[in-house]
Image (cartoon, one colour):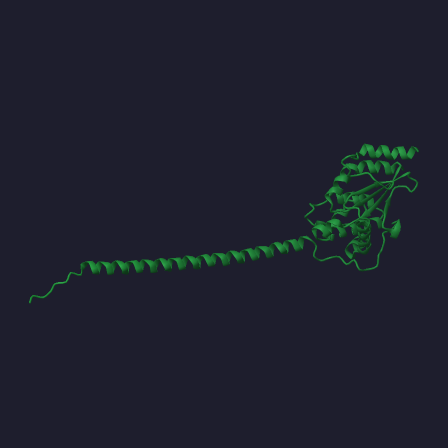
Length: 268
């Protein structure tokens, strides 16, 4: 009997096709695994970068917000000439003036700067004429809201300038050179002393020691406690003879209106 011939061409092709398919699937799986490894590497790298960036930002914020908090636990030392309850008022002007303007301010407060820029010359004119007495009261609202210690340190430096008899000039310099609200530049005593150089005769060893030692820190803290206890809401709070006169959009104050009210009181 002749040998039987079996045709295997189609079967061989099928096997070859299946083998190729398996190889393609395996290769695709390897490529997918490689892509997954690269993806995980990128994620880890990005996460590390984010963590490092966040740490850097936190470091910058900490450095910029005066994390070295001033000590306010010491004895309360009121500045020279302070008056009022608990000696928390820095008075400017003559005691015989018929009108008293009470101004609660924070040296970091942008709205306080706006008030000072708008009313500074009018207030100086009225105090120098003996018609107005100003009672400055200091708060540290921005330190609480934004973090940092610039409000407190600037207020302490202002109290030191009061000891030197130069409060008004230094008060004006601080507002004229106020940094951005988010920039706690006043937390640096060196900056406060540098600005004091704009006031003739203010920078002395005594003034510098007062600023660097935080001589009036506890007094500033007590002043801010009085501000919070009064529930005044915000700074600046401005009262003329005990009545709020600033910040009412229905009855806005102007420098000319303030001047007229003070002059009318002086004539009465």
